[in-house]
Image (cartoon, rainbow, N blue to C red; front, side):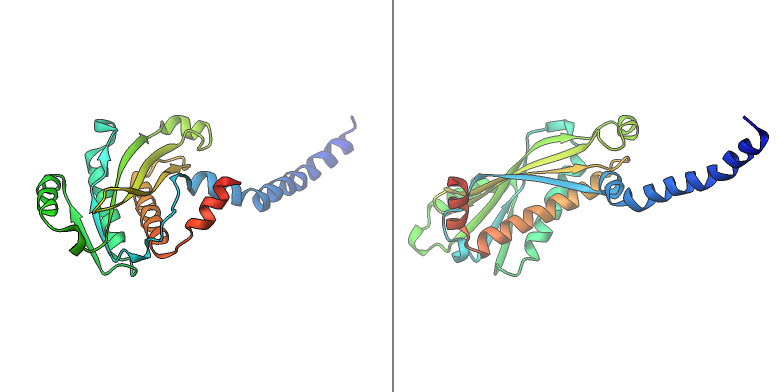
Length: 216
C-alpha cells in the first residue's frame, strides 16, 4: 500500500469514528437511561376488583409482614412502611387514615368484635407482605450493564374491615436497573405504586372492566 493511501486512511478514520459515535450518541441514550438510571415496575392482579369501593371513606393501614426476614435490612422495612403510610395519608379520596401496628391488632380486634356491625363505618384495610428482596451484585450489574437487577416485591391486599373479605389483591415488583443499587429509590417507588393502587381501586370503580378483561 502506498504512503499516499495510508495517509488518506488515517485522515478519514476520525471522520468515520465520529459518525459512529454520533450514531450511538443519538440512538443509545433512551435505552441507556432505562437500563442505567431507571426503575422498572412489574405488577399483576391476583384478585381483581369486583365491588364498588367508593363507599370507603376511611382506610386502616397495617405494617407489611416481612416474609424475607433478615434478608432485607430492617431499616428498609421501616422506611417502606413509613413511606406507604405517608403517601396514603396524602390521598384526597379518604377522610381518615389510621395506622395499626402489630401490638394493636389483637386489642383492636377484641374492641371491634364488641361493637355492633350495623353501626360501624366502612373501613378499608390496607395490608400486605414483602414477598421478595434481592439486592443484586454490584460487580455483576456493572459487567452485565445493569442486568443483575435489585428487586423488591410487595403483595398488597385490600380488605373490608368488618368482614375481613379480600376485595382486591395485587403483586408489585420494582426492579432497580441501575449499575449502582439504590434501595432508597426502590422503596420510594414502591410506596408510590402502593398508594396509586389503593387510590385507583377505591376511588374509580372499574370492576366490571377488569372482570371483562380477565375473561377475555
